[in-house]
View 1 (cartoon, rainbow, N blue to C red):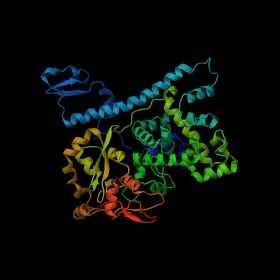
View 2: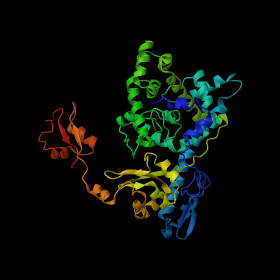
View 3: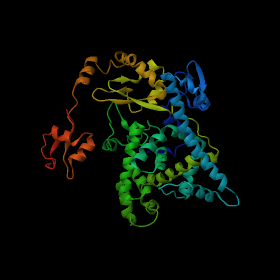
View 4: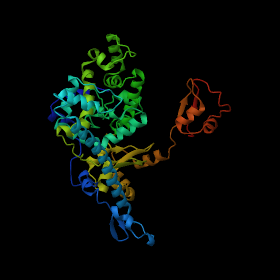
Length: 462
């Protein structure tokens, strides 16, 4: 999307570490969530409360079924069990992935089979099955050796949190999940990364592009920093580029420099999209300098994520909760209200909710999500009144109570749709989550086939 991290990745590691991670949460005593280290210790001994006794999860089925008893768990215990289960399952999934590729190395990395490092890298890349062609050359080798440095282990640790989110959005969009590592190149997996050209977030969207893909950007909210929404937008952008070029390496190149420059490179090189071959490398010398390094960096990051263990690199657990979920907030809320009531580090809340630029959820006319560690959900629900009661303390500079209540009871603006060529009531109803009958009633339409191009119709009942 931007040349930000192509340039950043060429900086010394110390500089990268200071710039991208300055605002990330640090280990502290005021974090009421199950740390990854604690999950690792406890995952094999989850306990269920049965009446007054704690019963090991593995032996829970030995309970006397004749007594018709079953484990009795408090909501807090259930939250804790879910947090450990979800976090450990996610971590085990990636650990298995890493182990499989390490095992592949032990099978093919023999001196008798390979006489040089290039042959070894080629063999390993060929084992990564993906619709995105992973070429090998000196540019890719340089990227491999860069990302396989221990200095990048900290960056890859955040994959435990961000990659499941990215993968889910990519699967829903129908694009290769392996492109997840492009976020490492773009931002170093930092949702707060910002370029000198105002590109922001884990996927480095410019303001205009972010808005084009439906991201809210204003003084209070910047959804380019929301990893799920930004990943959804990135998936849409990449899929659009692939539909244009029919080649994932060109789609990735276009994400960096834009389709206009890719088109000019194709024109200058004389290469046609119908030509067989490796299109990115065919137009390589006609692309902008940053883009020439961008695609090889993606390939190097993809290799490093799979094979870092073969290079003696260990990815640590991230200093943030892995198991999280969201609750919808329908009135203004400062993150400090949650932090002070639930005794959770404000830096953790900021990391989980990076889209709120002033730490305020501005829910006056619509609801917004608040992301929390799973084990705090019951406590949040129990303390909800106490949390919102603090708004006069934390929000007095921004809102007036009377205005909040007035906004909550105001009807939202009517949503309108302008009829375009090919529109049908059925398609419009599906798009806006209503029925054809509702559209006909709201707009006094007698004949569903009487729509006119340019006609504006209501698509909500307000």
